[in-house]
Image 1 (cartoon, rainbow, N blue to C red):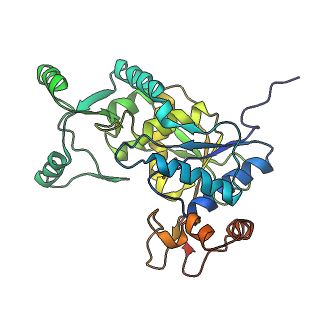
Image 2: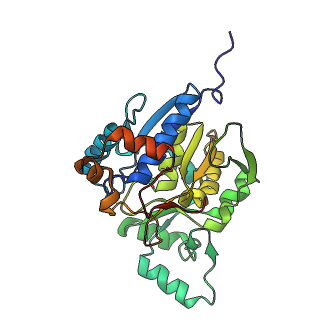
Image 3: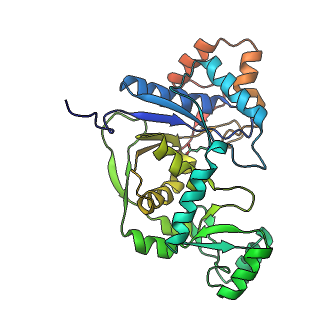
Length: 303
Ligand code: GLU
């Protein structure tokens, strides 16, 4: 018998950051990722992205688990927590460092602002103005001295990384996902500039941890919010550099509140916990979300 083709066995995931309680947009996203996997006879996994030391709170992890269970979101296998995977991030950083693709960055936010202000036109990328590069060409002696003395992040030397990886495509499927392998889009990670892969205050950045963990979980289909679309080419580049498989990406629109802004975790009234406390029935809410019926004033933004 042939071994199962990993791309036939669909694995999806939901990957919340425990920076607050979940709102209906998160519930909608999690239900869709779960339903996609179930319909394909695949698996749905939960990952808690809890390495943002400044914003992640352990009590929110428990709250997220409770909110998801209440809504009827059930994941396969054990939940993965990024805080338990630091050694994996460290070894990927070592590997990229040995490839000559990382450099330490000592800049504070204020330093970066000042560099932008001093340049006639701060180059803008997909995620705002890009890092101006003050630490990229730092003389070795100065770098060694600062490394020993100052807090630092590690940045990817984007030009060197792109040169090493060569041209790349990523696979994109429209939302709602109707099956198939999507279309190939040229990845243009260069517009993101020299992204941070290890933060001063966290052992790995979102880009690195997310890319490694999606691969470690065997995720074949990433369904996530359209706000993360600009991160996908960077993830594709890291996959190429680290010899990881590349999943299919589907970006869903974000929910927009009555103020015209995307729903934030602080938006209490549409938090799952608030709805539960108000006596809303979980199965009725789940049915509404599955049908993309949202409370009055809440609508879908651009995909
Ligand atoms: N942790 C991210 C968030 O809560 C989502 C990451 C992802 O789906 O790639 O926005």
